[in-house]
Structure formats: C-alpha cells, structure tokens
Length: 188
Length: 207
Image 1 (cartoon, chains in turn orange, red):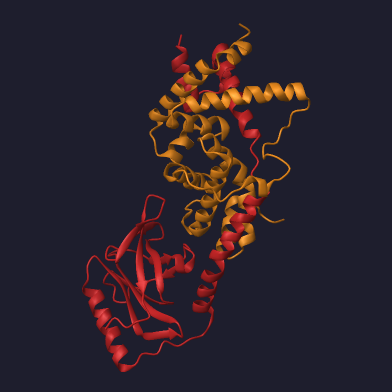
Image 2: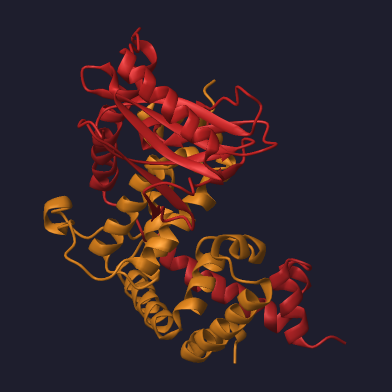
C-alpha cells in the first residue's frame, strides 16, 4: 500500500514526482484558503496567496526540515505572504472558474435553517473583522485550524504568553460582539 | 478555588482538558469554537486552484530537472586549455586564501557543454564534517552537491557546470545549518527569514 503521509509525499516530490505535490495541494488547499480568507482577504486575493504559497513551497521543498510537519511549514509561508501581500489585481476571476455559483458549500438541509446559519456566520465573520489582526490570527489558528498554543508559538514566532494574551483578548472581544449568541447557549 | 482566568490560562496552555473547565467557561469555549469552526466548514478551494498551482509547478520543474539531468546523467568531459588550466589553478589558489568564504568563481574557458560554464563554489567551514551546496539549479535539494575539503584546511570546494544565468544558492554545513555565502555578489531574502546568495554566470569571459 502506498504511503500517503506528508513526509512520504514530500520525499516523492523531491525525487521528481510532481504528481505527489498535487496530492499535498489537494490536502491543504481548503485549510489554507480558510485561514487566508479569515485573515481579511477577499476570495480572489486569498486564492492568489494560497497559489503563491504552494508554488513557493514547491520551489523550496528541500528546505522543509521536518517533512512530517509539512502543514506547519506551509502555513508559515502562507502566514508570511498574508503579512507581505498588499492589495493588487487578482489573477482569479470567479465567473470563469465556477459559473454555477460561489465556492461556499452549504451542508445545511432546509432553507430556514440555512438562512439562520448564514445569518449567524455573517455575524461571526463581522465580529472577527473587528478583532485586531494579531488576535484574529491566534483565534483562527486555534479554533479554525485546530492548533495548540504551542503550535501557534512555533508557527508565528510569538511568545507563549503573548499568544495566550491575544487569545484571551480576542475571545473577550468576540464574546462582546456576539453576546446574544452566547446568551442562547447559557440559557440566560 | 482558582479563578476562571487562571483556569482558562491552564486550558489554553494545554495543562488541563476542556472538561475540567467550570461549566460556564466550558460552554462558552465550546460555543466559541463551534461558531468559528462553522466558518471553516464552508470554505472549499475552487477546482481550478490545484490546476493553477500545478501549471506553475510544471513550468518550474521542466527546466530545472532538465538542467539537473543534463549535468548529472550525461557523460561529459571538462576540458581545460593550458590557459584555462592556469586560470583554474589561480582560482583555486585565490579561493584558499580567501577567508571566511569565497564568492563563486566562474571559468568561462572551462566550458562543460555547449552552453554551460564551470562555476567554482568555495566555502570556508573549519571543523565541519560536511558541506553541501544547494540552490535553484538543483531544486533546493537537501542532498545538493557535496563540496570537498581535499587538503583538510577547512576550505570546501566544488565545481558545477551551469548554463549562463542568475542563480540563488546556499551552503548546508553538517547537514543542518543553512549558511549563505558571505562573499557572494549579493544576497536576497528567501521569504523564510533567511537569505540566499546570488551568483551570476556569464557566458562572456571575465578576463
């Protein structure tokens, strides 16, 4: 059975099998796109950033010191690009990519539930936009990407105490912005 | 009894699991996690994204691997004319005296192929057990090209046939330390917090 772990795929790419890199792209493109989008990029620009990041990763794959941690290494590239990429004309034009509709895929069954869920998501997105970038990054990495504080420390280079402070402040800000949603949970 | 803030701190540090948080804090945490994660569920990269990446990757791959294959697989002889030999000896001598490193020296007279120029890379690393050269001309392979310290002086040397052009490179000392060439013509940010060295290989004679 073929080993499809990140480290095995990285080794195959380095030995000249570029199709293996396609598997890595498929594996991480949604996760990276989600991060970039919620760091405040529009969809076309977010795709630019992710595309650039993968191409950079390919060019410098030999520098991935721990191939089994390819995702973290890739994230560093994405994160750096988010910091350094300004607004520009995107290469991406959605109408030519997906003529049938947006790339957002709903998993919700009924129209009422879908409306409510969409409304909630819009509120969460709007609330996240009000949070300072460093706090938003910590929140997205922890809650959206599932990283631990220790991981975030390695990914961002910030100290553990700074990350925890960002998370606490970010949580507070979100809780304030989304108070009604939290009240529903608390039953108050 | 610990304050919520202390317990939240311990939870964020990974010292205690979610279940050990007080009920109010735990529900709040679960709700926050659920709300933010619901955003992630919706993001799907367009099908064209992978294709766009792979198209770009293919453009990178072909010339680099062709160049690498040309260099590594095709038997070739590097012939030096007496004049070129003298130049090479002079280059070696200069390299040995330069400290702490030496910029790559191209010898246009020592043409390895129709369009390639033997380029000498020299790096000073006294006490190192190995030095490898990597760069865009070998797709940044970690194995790269091994340098030799023939005289055990700490001066590591290799000659690489390269087509004329501008290349980025760096040295790997003892298999782990990525070190730029301190005497390269220029250094560029590699986008990962380090710098790459730059060598310009010219088809024209430098003499």
